[in-house]
Structures are given as C-alpha cells and as structure tokens.
Image 1 (tube, rainbow over the protein chains, first blue to last red):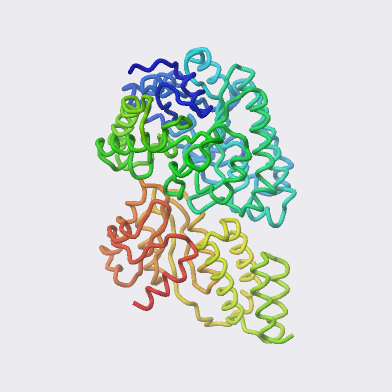
Image 2: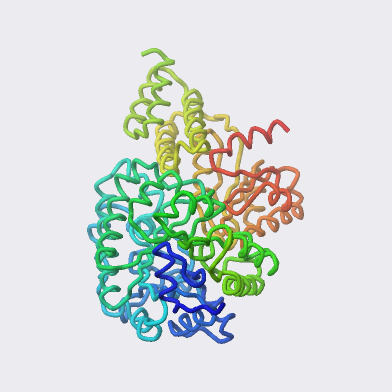
Length: 364
Length: 212
C-alpha cells in the first residue's frame, strides 16, 4: 500500500494516538559527519540538514535555535571556547548543534557570578533564522519543529556545573530557583517565537536523568524542576503546539511528573536505562505517544544490517499497532561510534525498514 | 558526650547532608580524644550506607554528590590532625581515558575513595595512556581506575592496559574499569581485573580484589 499522508499529517496523527498511514520517523539531532555521508557532499548549513531528512524520509524536521547574528565564540586557545552561557567546550569539527564539540564545564557557578552575568536574549536577531528557512522550504509538507534545546534544567546545569547545581539544591536553594527561572523564561520566549514564526511542533530537549535515575530524588525534582518544565509545556500547548519532550535516562521514579507535563510525545526511551518502550506503550499509551525503539547504544553501532532490520520490524510489531508510536533512535544520530560507515549503513537500513514494514494496518 | 555518641553524630551529620553540623561534630569528637582514624571509619560507613541506598534505587545522583561534598569538608577538618605516618588504605590512580571528557562518575569514585582513606591521584579527563603508566610508576600505586562514557573511547582502556604490560607494571596493579557503556564481559575482553557498574560499588570491588 502506498503511503497517502504527508509527513506533517502523519506526525500529527501519531502524536494524537491514532494510526497514520505508516509509522512516522523522528530523529532530533544528526551529526554533520552523518549528514555528509548520507548526502555525499560537505555540510554547508541548514539546507543540507533539511535535504538529509528528506532523503532519508524522516517525517519531522527539528531545527535547533542558533546564536545571535554576528555572535562569535570566545576561544581561550586553539581548541577550547566559551559559549553564550559561559560554558566551556572543546571544539570538534562537525559536532551536533552546528559547531559545539565536547562540553567541558560551566563557569557561572556562584550566585555572585550569576548576578553579574548578562543573560542571553532569546529574541536576539538570528536565533531562529534556520527555523524560518526550514518552514519556508518544507513547512507545508513536513513536521518542522522549533527545537528548544537543553530546555531548562540541562542548560542550567551545564552553565553552573551539574555537581555544583545539585549541591546548591541542598545548600543554596534560592540560587537554584533563580537560575532555573531565567532558563525557563528564555525557553518560553524562544518557544513562543518559534510558534509565531509558523512552527506547529516544538521539541524540548532537557535531560534530567541518567541510566540510574533522575539526577535528584523525586521530592527535589518536584520542588525545583517540575513547576518550570510543566509551565513551559503548558504555555506552548495553549498556543496550539504539539510538543515532544526529550530526556535521557531512567524516568520511572518521576513518571507521574512526566505525565503531568502534558506533552504529546516522549523521546528517547532508553532501554539501557531500564525504559521498556513496549511496557510504556501498554501502561501510558493512551496519554503519551512513545518516540523511540531503535537502539543507538548497541544495535546501530555494532549490529549487522540484517539484525537492524529484524529489530526494527520487531519494535514496529510490538509498539506501533493502534498508533501513538513514532520510530526513533534511542538518543540521536551522533558520531561517537567506533565505525561511522557501518553506523550510517545501519541507519539507512533502519529507515528503509520503517518505510517498508511500518505501513498500517500493523498486526502485533 | 560519650565517645560512641560523638562518632554516631559524625555519621548522622553525613546522612543529613549537614556541612556545618559535620564540622562541629568532628571538632567535638577530636576534642574528646577520638582519633582521625576512628572518624574516618565512621565516614566510610556512612558513605557505604548512602552507596547501598543508591544501588537499591532509593537514592539518586544528588545524594551521592552532596554526601561526597560533606565528606570532603570533613576531611578538610581532619587533615591537620593526621599524625605523621598516617596509614592509608592504598594508593589509587584514576582518570577518564583519552578522547573522553565525562567525569561525574569518576569524580564520585574519587571522592568516595578519598573519604574512605585512600590516597587518590586523579588525573582528570581525556588522559593519555602514557600518563597513567607514568603516574603509577611515580606514585607506586596498586590500583588503577579507568572511566569512559562513550562507545568510541572505551576501547582506549585496552591501550592503557597494554601499555601497563609493556612497562612491566601490569602485575603490580589492579585495574578497575567503569562507565555507562561498559559491562563485565567488556572488562574481561580488555583485560581489566574488575568492572564497577555504579560508583558506590568501588569500595566493595577493591575489598574483593584485595581478598583474591
């Protein structure tokens, strides 16, 4: 059966827990090295990212926000630079998010430094230039998303330093609230700006957990993080956005708060963190679309193409019936793998399999 | 106050994540003639309890980090009171392997070891193989802890172990590896002596290796 829906309609239908013509595919971030391998040409900006999504047949086109026009990172030496939030990074060519490489540390790590810090402007010219290009190019057809990367907690913890921010939750709670509030305001204004520009879908990336569990006990999560996260989602939803929330890790201890956010989809549902997508579909499938299922820790870097196909078919059969499932890797298409060519071949097989076997009706 | 009560107070302040209370408790204990070694034993027990709760899923990263901070503050109070020739439990060289800059798990392991009476040489992140070998030789350490979070860097652990062999140091050192993408079988494959799944397991793992 030939797919009948446009990618955007397919995406929306799955997020509304209904069966589209085929299981949609979502990938939040792609390393530029992978884009180059797929397009067979050097990466030259957002148009290549859009082409890559189109070539692969991925239904969502998430576009990260950019730095203000004319902003330049401050290089401390030939490799290490400081970004808008005072975070130190080691430059790595072609890393995720345009130029970002490896995060080293946050430097705005005391209340005094924070008070002196001039917080970046979410509405600065240039922030959503890439998004506007994508909306104009493919916004009628594809589910173009405004990506509010590192939402609230993650941007805050990378700015202050995760360990320091966690310690401050016990010893300087008002400082933590102040930091989170500023990041909340930034993300809200940015999200609203994306919607005003015409985006109908928002991706909020914001890691609050690792494989063991949330970075803090549920009671601290409720006190510090949840009110801001919920308010961000609710405000954007009120303006008609469909919202996918990305957070790594084992979310089971805070699953009630995740449901309370009111998001449409949850990504990436990491099996190595004990998150079982089939089980989540059974338990929460009526309230939450599940976005994930293709293991990027073991399967895509290490398995054979046939094993990838087998696994993708299995996850489609287990999770896709009834709708409310969007196929995605269990993190992102990153480059931290031992054999990048093998990884790309497996990614191609994964999307081919999704197109071939993800057509509804699907029997479990 | 009775000695056992004073020591109990040290552990309680750790479990309550109470930095100021910890300083007071240790000063009181020292004033009453309790030795730094006795206080250290109490701290080690407290960290062990926190680690066990973390392993059972009752505690989370923030509790490991804050308790580590409190234990470090305790060590600062104790440091001037350690006599010469204070017996350390052993020497450990630790670091994140080359190409990888993740350090939270490694930092927690480092703090637990330090607070439990080990002498720790933390080389930081993105550490070249040769630096591990040199540090082990120079410090005469018996334990090496290697950390990695990326599947693309974890194989660098094998390089470090091979370099240790080449330098003729492998038999003098127990190598312990840890990090999210690792497993028992990976540890065996690269020739490590032990794998630590979660940071708080480190003390148990070292004790087991010492018994072997």
